[in-house]
Length: 268
Image 1 (cartoon, rainbow, N blue to C red):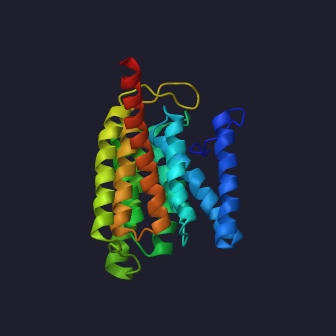
Image 2 (tube, helix red, strand yellow):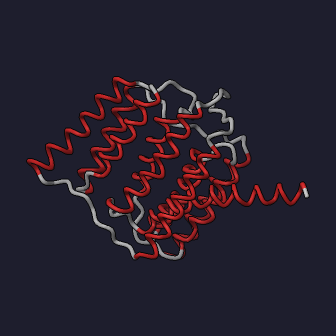
Image 3 (cartoon, helix red, strand yellow):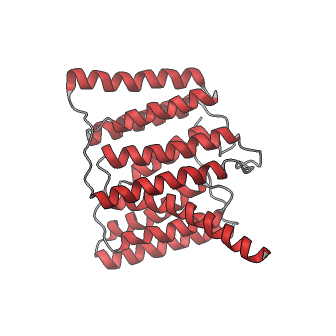
């Protein structure tokens, strides 16, 4: 019924490595913060950063490890990590890219809509519902579950409209970061969009070994960039979540550049 989950095959060394690394980071986080729960959250943030890049750049598994390494910045300043928001972004991307190799179901779309509504009302911010509408727009364009995506879009937009006119529980957050941080975020997102254009041209296999539709993969990558920017400007994103999003985009970007440089050096 639910097709957006991806199982981990522990026979793969890289899967063993990321789980072990996450556990070690969680232990270090516990020691540094003096709080076991904070350590667990930091450990999961490393894993989820890795998972984001496995969606953004499925063909280069070590790009995900580079991004995970960048996310270790959260060890030095930990305040609050919204892990459920990161999971939500992963699910939105999987709705679009079909990387699981399973047919998208109506239950998938409406379960993620339910999570979206929860995040919106729990945080008092409509940006989550608006990002969901954007994701459904991409889904309509790719021709996947068009009726369900259309209905879910109407429901999401309706929730926002009803609240704005009658309830006033949802709003749009304001930017809480300096101009320097804003410039960094916009620059990384802009460069990552160029990267995704190149990455989407390569053949990619899903979890069942079949070729992934390149337009669907590209749509999920663009959605990530759009969601990142919208959450940054309007979502009241925490500093620790900002580190996760920046690490994922930067890890994929720098791995791609570094890999190209190394290949060129070897050919010369």
